[in-house]
Image: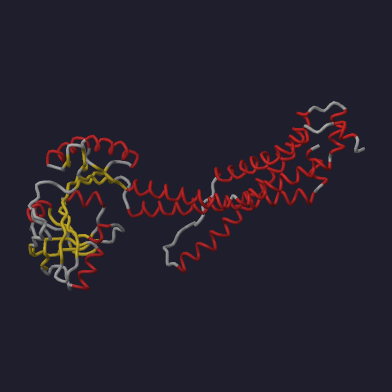
Length: 387
């Protein structure tokens, strides 16, 4: 009976389906766009950061600052194989360019996957340094720094009274690195013990830990926290991107769901009109033994079919809209905004499409509850008087 009623009013049914389908398609398109942007952002982080690296820094506890001493490093070596302590200090070139020099050991280079573009890694001589790709380009243009040519820089230190205590240091760049795509491109590297001696540090500024797989990062960070130290990893950036994109997608979905509200109002209006139009049918049905529950089911069945068909049609339109945005929007981002080549701007999956159908069913059935209840409560005697 529900299917027959929908087929008798083809134009009205088609308009309702379009209203529901456009609302569903809008929500699907917005969610797929947000999902695509989130995936692209995470992929960029994964390209530039190693998910198996954990950067350990001094921790803050109730009893004060927990520094990274040699004993702390030895304790870490008992848990993990690759433990790379380092120090870093701010330096100023003759032209006034600020940069950081990391005092590291050989395993730090291996853990970060740093590759030389020219020259060699620093050797046994204490004043040798290796430049990051961005720093090398900057110092070459501004200060005329060349591989093998000594350069003087000022070590920026501060006394107990807070006053700067600059100290001139002579370095010999022996090589520079290929671009790593992160903050290491703007720094330089030297021998760890020499760097500690220059700044007279007794403690390390940080420790780099490399685990076997990204699945061990969470467990490792919990152990680091037990040591009283702080830690960070690329997963922090991924979690931040997920939170931001979830919020953006939620807000955009809220506004795009207005079209779904319009579709729901269309269902309410159509079903209320249908109750008036089918008063005789309802009266006769009750007169021959139909219960209120039977009438309720009949009207809700119509809403169920509208919701199912509207959801499927909405999924089809959502796929078409997402494909259009992916092709047109992706080309626009690459050409106009000079963004690197991205494979897809939107991302659709089974969960999004299934959610579209479920949302359509919910809106349709919820919108039809009142008209169905009203039809089930209709007095059969009053309905039969209209015969």
